[in-house]
Amino acid sequence: MSDDSRTFFARLSAQPPAPVGDVAAQRAHYDAINSARLEEARHLYPVTVSARTIAGVAVHAVTPANPGPGTLLCLHGGAFLWGAGAGALLEAVPVAATAGMRVLAVEYRLAPEHLFPAAVDDVVAVVAALRRDGDAPIGIYGCSAGGVLTAQVVARLVAEGLAPPRAIAMLHGSGVDVGGDSLATAAHLNGTPAAADLDRLHDLPYFAGTSATDPLVFPGEDRSMLAAFPPSLLISGTRDFAASSVAVMHRRLLAAGVDARFVLFDGMWHAHHVDVTLPEARETHELMGAFFREHLSA
Image (cartoon, rainbow, N blue to C red; front, top):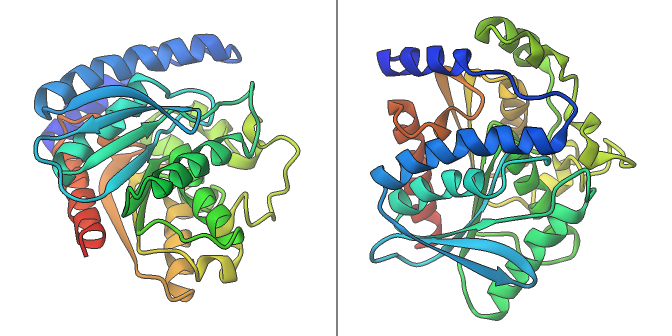
């Protein structure tokens, strides 16, 4: 862990905990944190941002100077409960600037107001509209819940006989539920006991009434589904509670014959890259930029 990372981790640990049980308060809590980080990102990564609606879904188009070919869809994190607005832009701005291509931060519907597959429906509708307009090639990436959603969107496209995106990236979340050593040890390593309260993603409100064995919920449980996945970049950290699940997803993609790459950052925690001042965050965005340029410009 770098000195910058240690400084940031100390600051992160000093933040007041998120409110419990009140979704509106949780959204306000994370929006305040994300808004401050977004201000830093906009300073470091000059881009233009405009609000649009595509297929009835609100998006923010984030465009760097002289964008190259291709469009990326950014699916924000936040347990399918929060993370819209500033959180979505925070995950889109550095990637647009580093990849040199337009990124659409998708404001997909959230729980508890909307349940699975509402978010998938929204993203698939945006993909379909872009393809009708001839706006290709397309890549998709997401962090945490957004990483899970990325896998679900690919699975839905495959199940409907539609082409998957040209490439995807899943950060700190994937197409399998959390578990393993990382879930058992991350809270201890990070000094955040509350993280240990999470037993599985399938218990989140968004998944009410679904089956954890449904390949449209967790595509990583179906090898035949994974065989149709596009080239995939997976990223996590040794202090990320989702690291084991991301590693499992990587192995299963490889077993299914997919071009899958896994980068594990030593000492990094869940969604470490959202603080753009970290050297590890810059490295993460550079990896993503190079990966999408490779696959979308071919």
